[in-house]
Image (cartoon, rainbow, N blue to C red; front, top):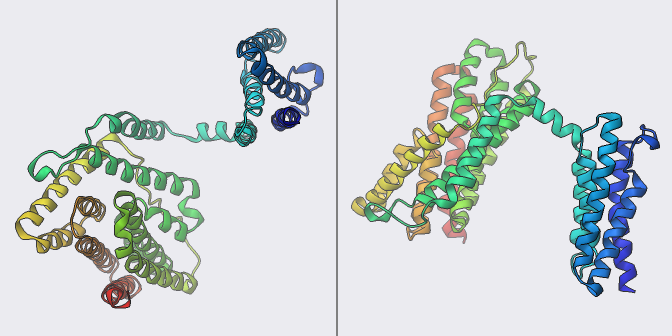
Length: 420
């Protein structure tokens, strides 16, 4: 009975892939193609039958059958290319995959994997137009950035030693580079999200996605635009606040990736700040009554480049060394002081450095307070940028909500030990 079930699943695997191929070539006459629905169904069943025979006669049966199938496919494809000049070998590869999945379906505990493989194969085949359009839409700089990200992730990361070097053994090359990869990946994803959505489709979405890249850069851009177009003040303030709120969530992602044990000390504080910031953003959004009179500028930065990754890695190493020195010489006060100073310019490097230090023994409460302090200082700086560049038009729309968010976060931080 188990044999019949296995063969039925092998046949179903061929049917799933065959239906997709049949749909793709539905407008082509049957005499003009060699692989239709029936062919894939039979190839899947063939894989199942050969796998069952291999369990009795030996694995050579399956290997010979695969070679015979490959020979038939190559011969048929050669004849087809002579007639139609069609060099696409995707159907041939799909046929071989169908055969292998059909064989996989007969192995105990692998039926689910075979079915999932069939669905994934059909999905990939169906996305031909999507892949082609995506490749055509890429620019040379974006391809270079993607290769750079793969270079620092797949090539550089595995070969770096995972141990401490330098004073106080504060510099771990593997961890430093892993944090570089984390930041680079978030920036890369944020860039393409903004590029796909486009700033013309909505400032709220643009602010949300730009918050993954650089909320400070967006604050400066929108603040300058608000000075030139005060009738758009509510809309631009909403975009700035969304980006600032996203920064708090970005910090949580970074902490969870480096030392998740810190999350209980940070979660409610940063979520409170983000919630209040988002609430004011929504309020300003709904209060915008003027139509958008001009095309708003793109706010995303360029895709990742290797130089950017190296610069961030160097900055991160310096801050990690400075944090270790501050702890050694000044204790907790030194860490707080460094967090406040670092937060003026950037919150990511100090967040990752302190989280890594907590992973190696720093008191988690001290680490959480330092990260919160850096985020608060960075938030105040962005509010000051908005008020300075745009003047009164963003003073109460941006700076006041950000200050309220910080006060609420501080209150939650003070009440958390009491409530727990």
